Image (cartoon, rainbow, N blue to C red; front, top):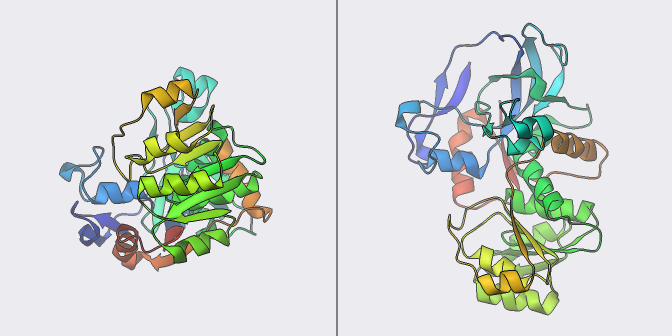
Length: 337
């Protein structure tokens, strides 16, 4: 079977189509014929050599977390899925026995990791991480959900966002940013989003963004947000200088969830405003399998329509990463096999 493997950690030009052996499932496993797999900033960090989890010793490496497809075969002891079932994978990998696996939430697992291997024609996965996919949800749509939308949904839950809340989303036109805007709308909240592109903001406004700010400079953004109101929460998937910005614009008692570092892995913040304003900074990684089930249900019911910017055949996976690196897209990029 073919796979889009990372053969060099040098950016998109390091992607090569390679032949790999097919597999038979072991106990508790299922082999999925992959129909679609979206890509994420997480994959690009690996491809750029900016991730501690993969080095030259691991090459060739097949990434891809967000698998949707059909079951080809199941291993011994598997009773939750059958060959021919349409499924989507929850990419969480957990130990199953630490206190957080026992008590929840699972994404606090002491050995938490993520599945990789979806950028291929087939993937061997833990069968208990597969969710049934309703016929009304296309494979490309399903592949857009797990990482970006599960992350966004869990951030919104951690920040206790509810109806009428005002949510600040810097970088509102990327995968997680778009998901935050759409899900805030589903929850009945209002949103403020930023982007360097008026055209991209207009696209996100069609998906529920209430207030768009065309800017990247924190001072300019802060002044614009203050004209709109004081956000109850901030969804920060950028890190860097946007952490202090989020703290500065939120109301007293505001809650910021942080899930990424696209704009920088360190942030300098104003401590005085943090404690005098009773504000919170909350770390958040991915979500739970229950979160993913809720998102699949919302999609099947027509309450959520995950935004897909473009799809690419497997042999054009490098082009998908180029589009992500060049920030040409609004929403998710999906590879189809």
